[in-house]
Image (cartoon, rainbow, N blue to C red; front, side, top):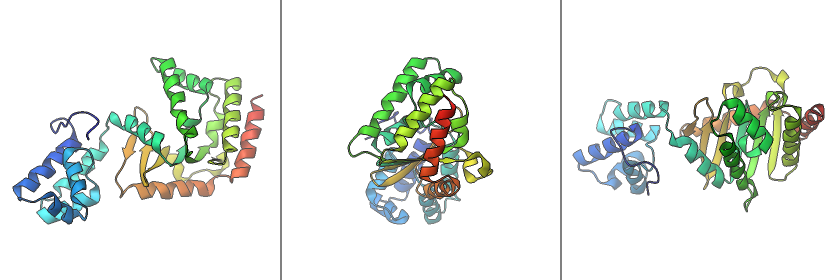
Length: 269
């Protein structure tokens, strides 16, 4: 069932795509099964796209345009929809994060929210100009409950060394935060690695992102000022897996990263 805002093709581009898919199907007197055969998927997926519960993927748009000779209409619509911003993306990302069996996180600017201490989170929200800091801190800490659920998620985190060196809230808060990272890095289900500053240019400099595996499928959330982007198109997601591996290629090994974390913690004494 559609859990978010009402179906609104006049105000939401993804809903308009769903509306157009249904309109084109009806004009051609096609069943859900017949449209599914065009895109090599079953009728249930077509039904979910038409209801707005699932977004049309680029690969499927290409097949529809070819079959119906639309002049690349669906491809253009999907491209424009992806370029836009949806206020529900962050909320949906949190829902995926809470259920994910595997998390792969690359962080360029901050300690990941799942790993933040109360003091660090408060200092971060204060610096960011958040209106209600305490609500933000409470929500941030409540997210971390997913790390303790059973079975515990498998988490890989790669941090830019600048995340450790940038003092957020002062030395005491940073020492507590890095000590927390050291503790987490020793958990059997968590790996923390660091990309040292002397690596120089690498693919991760383009920005932070998180790959979440939910029910065997990957979803990506990319971070950006003013709101991130949720990537669910199966044709895009493999690129993020490659980028995560490439960042891992230049990161310190797990044990060397742990030593660097301990050295950084001691420096904040």
